[in-house]
Length: 350
Image (tube, rainbow, N blue to C red; front, side, top):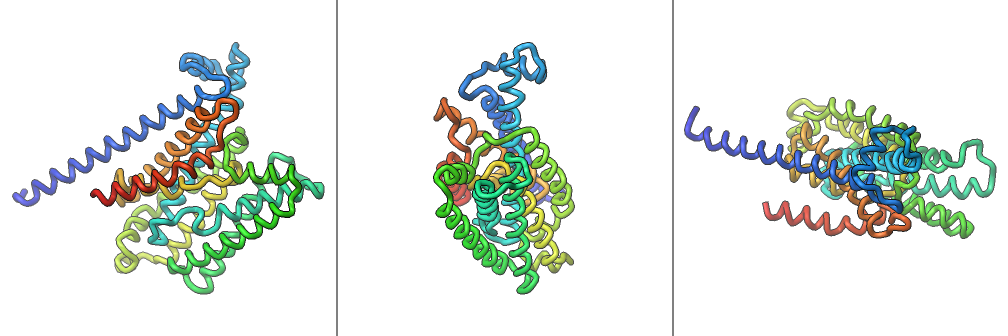
């Protein structure tokens, strides 16, 4: 081994060690936050009571503790992990295919479309009888509206090409359209319906149930292997479109696949919880700051970072308001700016 290769190898080993420490620290933080999330709420629980209720199962001897943990807090925790992971991966995919550090599920109008769909469902259910259970109506409409937004952006991309600027401009147009339509529905709604719409738009884990965990979790589990197939290609795309094309990649096809996967992840995440901002923007930056541009590492770490952010927001929301938890969408919106500034300063310092 040459003298020049030894320092390079040492630097690589030091960087790999830092990555392992960062990922281990993030995993430990997620475990601690998950335990805190199960402990906090209007009726607090000590760690021993949490472990006892988990070990006893949903039919444990302490019926009150079992009900609180298995029917309320555990579904909310799992939903937070699923939504955070989905938005983190979706944001990383969008930032990669659009070559835009500000890209997120909001950029292409997916979240605005989901909000419109939920608002339309809540307003429509007050006017006509819909053959769907009440708890399923808003999520189903939000999911369908997100797919409509995906179809609109996809149509523009098919006509004008899949270049990043085309996707961004089409997404911005779709976002403003659905935001305007959403505002119109809010203007038309009666006060009690308007309150339901506004609460849904806040973004909250309080609506989580085992059904929503199963649906959103299934979408995430289906999408992750599809993302794994393109990890190398996505890493190559981060080096530049010309370099990726020179390696023989079909960049347009890669963008379309990643775009559809990001749309499915976003739809599955926001349909049951409402609009949750900044997670899909911040989590990818945290992942790249921890492990770099290699998508074999940044994709799972982005999912981990998204879960950490959302569960931390849930814990903070419960601690700040003991009687009724502050919706996580409000907490992430308030905390998003300093988190983004911290990411910017971190990169600038490097």
